Amino acid sequence: MNAVIRSTGLWVPEDTVSNEELVECYNKHVELYNAEHADAIKRGAVEAKNPSSVGFIEKASGIKSRYSIDKAGVLDVDRMRPRVAPRPNEEISIMAECGVAAARQALSNAGRDAADVDAVICSGTSMQRTYPCIAIEIQDALGIEGFGFDMTVACSSGTFAIINAVNMIKSGMAKSVLVVCPELTTAQLNFRDRDSHFIFGDVAVAMLIESEDMANGDGWRILGTRMMTKFSNNIRSNFGFLNACEVPEPEFEDRYFVQEGRKVYKEVCPMVAEMILEDLATIDLTPADLKRLWLHQANINMNLMVARKVLGRDAEPGEAPVILDEFANTAGAGSLVAFHRHHDGFAAGEKGLICSFGAGYSAGTVFVERL
Image (cartoon, rainbow, N blue to C red):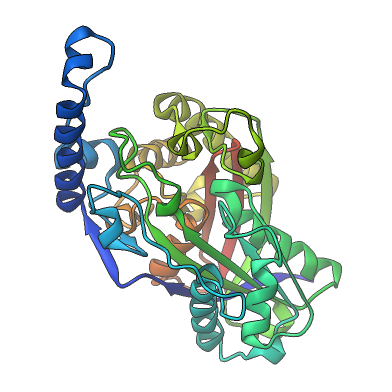
């Protein structure tokens, strides 16, 4: 039984933070830090912090802005992280609320309602809590029968969730699966670190995956998929419930996301390009058969390199769309958001690739054909 991507939905916060605003706040922090530690810096006991710049950010990443669940908290030099008000257990959690908004749009775009859906997969870099599952909360808010579960594979959370949905449909376990990827990633970001303070943005994206006999000739047939992982510490977050039990308890900022960006670039780009080419051969396609590559949106230089290695040339405008300038890195949601925003202009039979890659390392490919 074939599976199709029937529709997509997107939620974004009201607030955006420009590079200019982010740099202004960060540089104020640098001034305060260097003044406070002036004596230690002079003795060589503490290293002075260097200011950031808009030019540095855009050259390093291609990012110009990002959405944020709390702009005021991010730009408060005394805080430099989002403010999230606690909610009583009787209220919907913020992560579920964002996911529900994206899911409702996906259902509306397909002309579906809760009765048409058998399962919910909520997949993202980090869940707001361990249990009850955010997926089950989303399922309840939407009034969906069946089942739901959470999963996380960092930057490949979105594609791995799609592939799980496809396999459930192929096995007959479900005929319609709602994949929801809420990525509130600014909460994981150390805004006091020059090398990473600009990276993440907040978003939620949803995809409705259906069996082809439900789709009535509309949507995107899934031609082939693959998941691949390889252990690496080059992108890591040590945050978890066991932190509170560690002796001594770690410093707060030691729990944020960290990465070795240059190592990631050198190791991941060739790995992913080779994987894509192998997968194309497996389903009897060539790079020339792909009209568009919806790649993971972490860094523009990585996307350009992967596209070049796959296509054997630089990508033409529109062949590998970039959403980094508006959204920044949205982790597991990135390639799905790129698909949501840039899946127009396809005739029946034309093909493309949704591809994720990043922390883990992890990589996922979903080859699609327009019905």
